[in-house]
Length: 206
Image (tube, rainbow, N blue to C red; front, side):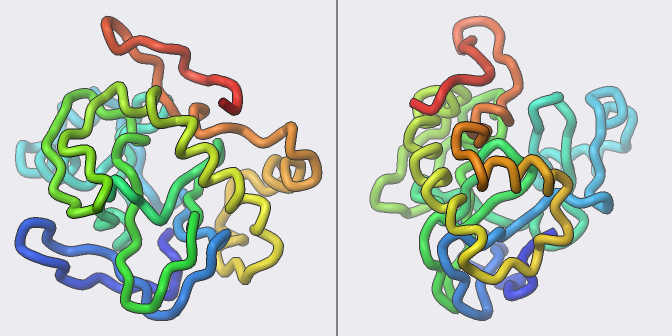
């Protein structure tokens, strides 16, 4: 479920539609959380769908650590990529704002965190745009993502959290807030890789 203070807007022809904040969203705010209405499909279930449905899933779903294709039921599926994303995750089924998001600003995440299986060109327009997103980005950029998300995570209790009731891992999150050593890193989300891109699925905070 996407944060309630957002709406779907057309961004530009190269990007299409995106999710925009309708009010300021402070750093540390949960901006999206997996919920029971989101649909999770196996490779076999995806392959059994008609071609038009497969195309939609390829565009609007992401792959989780179990290899499931997750399709968000609301406009969360329109969150666009940025190489300088303002929303990231630690090791739980939610994303949070890693910096203050102004009213009218687009919410973005980094598709490099979403278990890419092939490279594709990027047109996000960020000053630090990588040009091409690679499956190996999740290993090379994890320390950077962890640093941003970890600092924002410990602000959870200091800002309003309209999505708190949606969270599926409240006890684990509360435990990590009480003991930072228990915080799970973003690598928790990474599906194991094989071949030349292979690397450990879960690494330490480094």
